Amino acid sequence: MNLSSNTILLTGGATGIGLALAERFVAAGSTVLICGRRAERLREARQRVPGLHTYVCDLASAAARVELARQAVADFPGLNVLLNNAGVQNRFALAELPADLVAWERQREEIAINLEAPMHLAALLIPHLRRQREPVIINVSSGLAFSPMAAAPLYSASKAGLHSFTLSLRHQLRETGIRVLEIVPPGVNTDLGGPGLHDWAVPVAEFADAVLPRLAAGEEEVGYGTSEFGRLASRAELDAKFRQFNA
Ligand SMILES: NC(=O)c1ccc[n+]([C@@H]2O[C@H](COP(=O)([O-])OP(=O)(O)OC[C@H]3O[C@@H](n4cnc5c(N)ncnc54)[C@H](OP(=O)(O)O)[C@@H]3O)[C@@H](O)[C@H]2O)c1
Image (cartoon, rainbow, N blue to C red; front, side, top):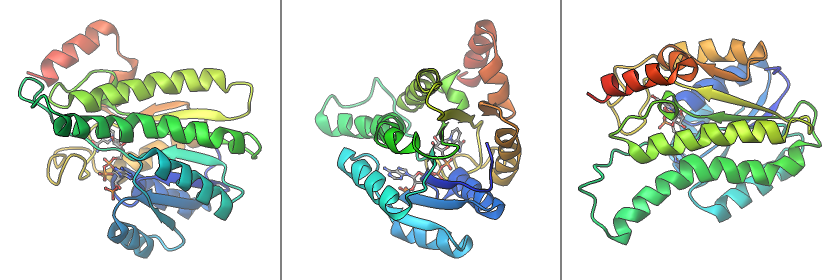
């Protein structure tokens, strides 16, 4: 994809991987709209990356997604890229979870943010995107889509679902002109899951610097390090990785 002349709706772009991608797309000459729940983080992102456009939005809510898509297209009729990046990661011990609606609501919300929201935003924006020049949908999945982290079972399942959906979406949209791409991060040092949990992981700038040239070169599915291995691995290699990672 071209990096320089897009108008991109990038969900969850105020922090972490999303902010690093937003910064680079803006530097390349694209217009970037980001959204998130925390207004303060959006304000900080605008200070760090002048030119960013921001929307407060909770993507767990279907009504909020409808409103975000409507407002973004109204404000930027040339919007041609949807980059589904927002995500949350919870650790759940499945045998210990209370069997009540409060506990289920927290699980359901993780699925809604990580899986429903990208599906719904794609559905909302496909009619608009197919009328644009060089339209693209990019989904941010995870290396855990290919080999789960058992401690984050709903997260891993939601990312496996997002990878599967991305393949179907790419196939179904192949005649529409909309390209469908997937970014498959490995562990990256962000606050995903809570501050400190990913301190061990790949620096976010290193990851973002590696991904964008590969998107520019036309690759459809881009991993890095362990997730590059995982997305290309055999079933036997994934089984070995699962045992090692979850030991
Ligand atoms: N870091 C890793 O190791 C890693 C590995 C594989 C995949 N990923 C994926 O990369 C993507 C970015 O994560 P990250 O690592 O950069 O973590 P992050 O810094 O926590 O970024 C996640 C962003 O999503 C936003 N978000 C979460 N829930 C939202 C909601 N309901 N509505 C709107 N925005 C919401 C957050 O903003 P608010 O909280 O303000 O809403 C935040 O800006 C996620 O999809 C994640 O699953 C990360």
